[in-house]
Length: 166
Ligand SMILES: Cc1cc2nc3c(=O)[nH]c(=O)nc-3n(C[C@H](O)[C@H](O)[C@H](O)COP(=O)(O)O)c2cc1C
Image (cartoon, rainbow, N blue to C red; front, side, top):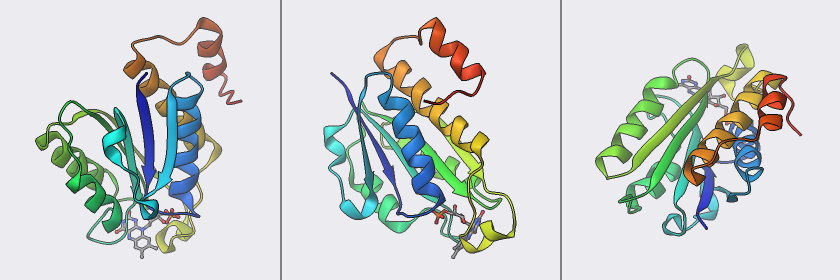
């Protein structure tokens, strides 16, 4: 049975909220899915798919602890998905991290960057909207089904269209 990990920079904050939704979406497919902040230094080797995410903090982009964990892992034969929350300059950093993992042999299956709205986002007080969280959940769900080689049942598809999450 394959296993997935949702790794995120740190909580509490926007990235943790998004990470939890990705995790819930992936887990509802039946995929064994764990959630961990980078501070807990999870062993990436145990997982077939790693969702790796961070807030974007200044020119360096992703949180250093996430970057370091990703850099020292062995990516041969593994899948990765990259996600970020940001105040407007996230996509470049997501693509840079995805590119690095691709060079290390990972199959980068998908990325999602969530732009937080409002002035609060600039000082780390941004909150994802309900739509952002639905997108995150659906991303986790879709990637998990892909890994498992399955399709969502019809009823679940209907729910997703309505934005139903529970
Ligand atoms: C110190 C700091 C620097 C930031 N720098 C950037 C930046 O360069 N580009 C950007 O798009 N967002 C930037 N942001 C916004 C954060 O990316 C956004 O608030 C973050 O994704 C929220 O995640 P968190 O609440 O989990 O920390 C910055 C926020 C802080 C606090």
